[in-house]
Length: 159
Image 1 (cartoon, helix red, strand yellow):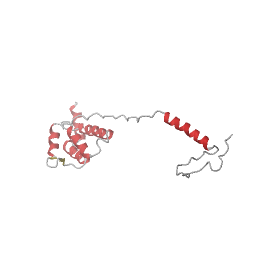
Image 2 (tube, helix red, strand yellow):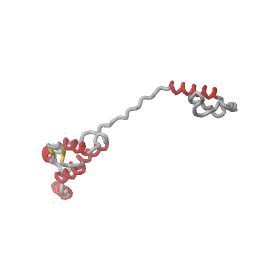
Image 3 (cartoon, helix red, strand yellow):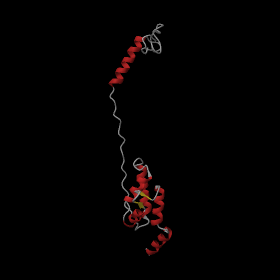
Image 4 (cartoon, rainbow, N blue to C red):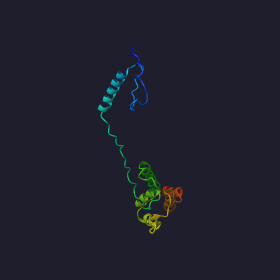
């Protein structure tokens, strides 16, 4: 059973004669009933605890093992660990300069010396414009040029 329709003149939209926002009655309810329901809704809305925004847990990926260039086969793992860190902490490593600086900080001995030869002390920048250029340079300098031949030689040495 529904409530009677509001009498004419009790339901309106927009501004009333005094310029205040007029209340619109819900279909099938009077203005007084609509106001009472709105008061109940407002009471419940205001009495509900406000939830503090939940903090998104930040995951810190482990640092890559330093790379010293003595074992060329470790370069692939070094770069993979760096890429995992960069993807996992994307906001921290959003630009190439930060990626390069972080990677160089993990180079030791000969690779570190060679990398610092690529640093322009006047401009305080690296000679690589992108992280991709840096990895190409690192691979050319330290990657095993013949991984198949090296693996075969290591197998022969096991005998």
